[in-house]
Length: 246
Image (tube, rainbow, N blue to C red; front, top):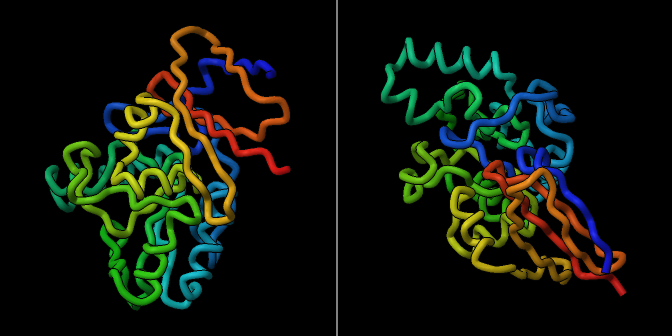
């Protein structure tokens, strides 16, 4: 076995970082970004690569358009203020996160719309048919979850948004989808014990939660283990270990 040390500051960044009104995003450098189809919308590089693959598997970009991806803190504040002035407080709080509390600031969230002559920036149409429906059914295999569902509004604090998807990684999207979980529930789900799933390529993955109450936490891993960590923005780390390829 080998021992790996993770620092407390790592609990506030990574593909599984929880961002909502109770868990604001730490300010820092922008993520590594790249442009999506058409170039106007930016997304974190890994998320962008897998989003493109998922859209193409669903039929391509002919019928799907990226509406909103990464936003700076200033852009999120501007959207909040403009929506508040135009639509009022109730609508704004239901569909727009306050500055610092928006997943869009991570570069891991994307709003998608059905291609049309006119598209609503705040609530784009993304129906459960055609390429849009195919994307929704394929999303978890490419690491995306439909982030805001009607039955989870009390937990997320955001109204149902069929157009908003969040990249978390394939094993985590699969575990959340199969167990009916939103991101707010995922940490407690993992605290109950390590979880295992088998990916579409047949490879087994084990996911566990590690609290980090001090400046650092030490973890024992198998020699030559392939692993990834992500902060959950709640004082803990989520550890993902892939089964060794023989």
